[in-house]
Image 1 (cartoon, helix red, strand yellow):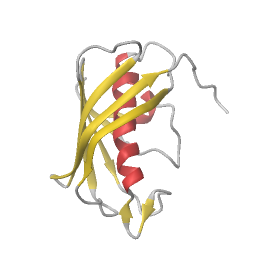
Image 2 (image 1 turned 120 degrees about the horizontal axis):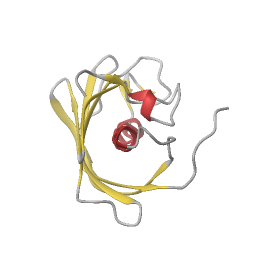
Image 3 (image 1 turned 120 degrees about the vertical axis):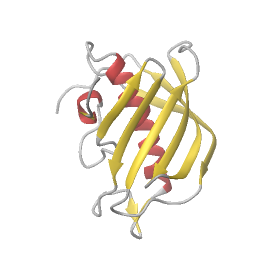
Image 4 (image 1 turned 180 degrees about the vertical axis):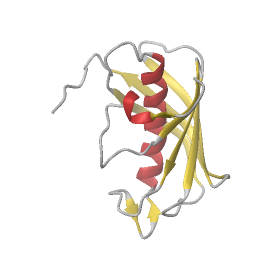
Length: 143
């Protein structure tokens, strides 16, 4: 991967619930994305991305990682199985640029991947923690 890619090509999510704009970097066990918080996003509350929006940004970064690595296959659905030690230190303001990194901890076991995540807003750490994602056998269909 030489330049940023549009993340939606690797995600089952669609507007208005996209919370990742671009895939910046992707390796076997690492992924980095960005997202500019829009004013009219459904997960914006009081001029900030909500806690749920931050968590969904992490989940969609995990999904982007999985989708990019299996880009030759149909997009599969992942489900957040658990969140552990997730700290949301502050809420990103509308217009701010988020940069999210996820690092897969070892190989998936029984279709479960464990990711350590960090979310930065304008270079400042705003969230970090662990997310476990389970891949299902379901492949979404276009509506």
